[in-house]
Length: 135
Image (tube, rainbow, N blue to C red; front, side, top):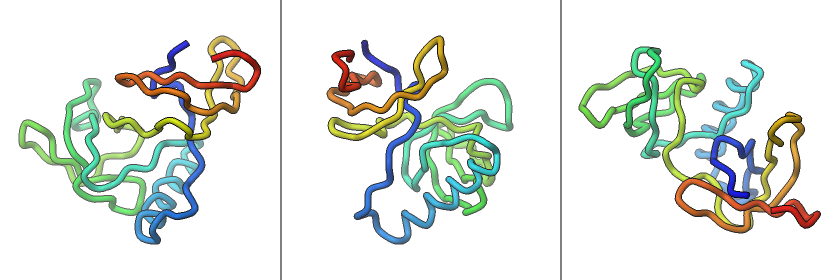
């Protein structure tokens, strides 16, 4: 079954990541952990959608700065900007995982997390091999 990006919980951080991006990812991860949630780290230049002004609707934009405190500056596609959008109000619009990445997937109905490996990415959905014959 194909899985949407929102069903993939996280991927391990690559050991070869550069120091600055790793520090930015660590600050975002620390803020998310403090909130009791795990989020994919964001980077400058990443395409995202965010809830402008904390509202209910997502608007497309680009991360222009990681503030290091769990908030991000965003330039929206319509020209508006925000300087401190909290991570829970942002979703990535770029695939974060690719073939071969190890991931944890939350199983629908049970809430359990299963370990797997991404075997295919297709327009925002992913096939994941769980090693037990299920995909």
